[in-house]
Length: 155
Length: 82
Image (cartoon, rainbow over all chains, first blue to last red; front, top):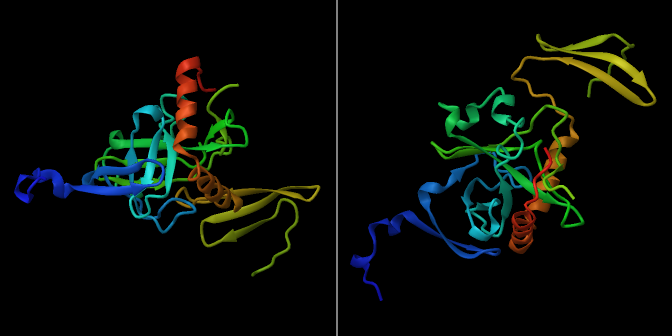
C-alpha cells in the first residue's frame, strides 16, 4: 500500500471517472473542457473531457465529467473533408475566448443509423474547442449544404 | 403573437436592421429572404431539435460499435466520402 507521502504530487490533479462504456478512467483535471451552454440536448452538462482510446482510433470520445454515463463518439473532420472548415464559417468565435485560431480543434459527433455500415457524422453542428483555455461549444452552421448525416464511410 | 398579412414581394422589418421579404409563394411553401446583421443567427426552427435528437442517439453508441467501425476502416483501408 502506498503511503500518502509517497503518492506522486500530480495525484491531486487527477480525477476518477466511473464510466459505463470504458470502466474507470483517470483523467487530468487540467484537460477538462468547459462548455458553458452544454451540448444540445444535454444543456445541463458543462464539463467534458476528450478521451483517446487506442482501439477506437481515429475516433475519440467526448465524455461528461459530471455524468460519466454520457459519452459521445467524435472525430476530427478536418483531415477527412478538406473543404470543411467551420472555424472560418463561424463569424463569432468569442464564446471560445479566441485569441488565436490555431488553438481551436474541431470535432464532429458520430451518428449511426439502423445499419452499422451507415456511419455518418454531423457536419451541421460541429464542436469547437479552444485547447488553450479549455473552452468548448457546439455551433450550428448556417450553410444549408452541411448535413447532420454526412456519410463517413462509403459502402 | 403579432400576425401580419403580406403580399408577394412585400416585407416586414424587425427592429432597425432586420428585414424579411416574401420572395415566393407556391404549394403551401413560402420562400423568405432575410437581411440581418452578421451577428444575428438565422436558423430553421427545427434544426436545434434535430441536433438534440442526433446527440441523444450518439450518446447511446457503444464502445464496441466504434471499435468495430474503426477496425473495419483500418482493415479495408476505406476512405470517407468527400
